[in-house]
Length: 163
Image 1: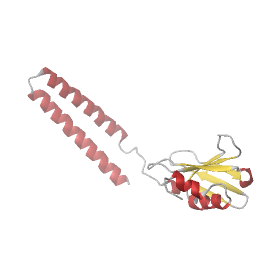
Image 2: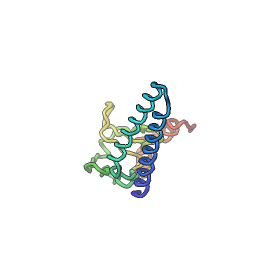
Image 3: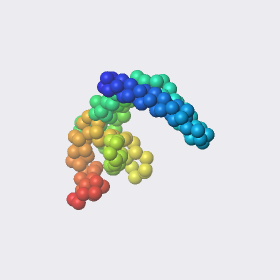
Image 4: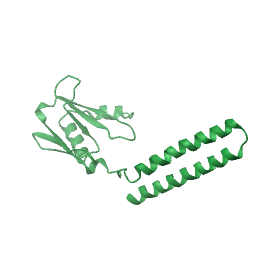
């Protein structure tokens, strides 16, 4: 991961320097004042991008799959969500199965994990928010189906499939 990040930084730095040099050449070679100002502005923007790239070089974190830092576990009486996100403080939440009145799946799209919201009553405030991609997430969904807190047919309809 670090090699890729370092390589990306080198490519970005080289491309920014090349664009600044080409903008400078363009600014010097054209007699039109408007084109010179445009080239100088472009070089300035690219220079700012280069400075930002150099400043942030090596500071981005590698991608760590959610299942490696978030776990959902359960037994016959309760469930627990433990999360230790990279670069943030770890946390954990528990709930008794007997306190859960209903569950609802929230689809987050292609770039985020879908979530299951657990509600203690008919209010709109969830008591627990469980990412489906967490370690143990698939078993957790099966347990929700088994306990009839979540309807598998409703899940299929929400995904645009016919039950």
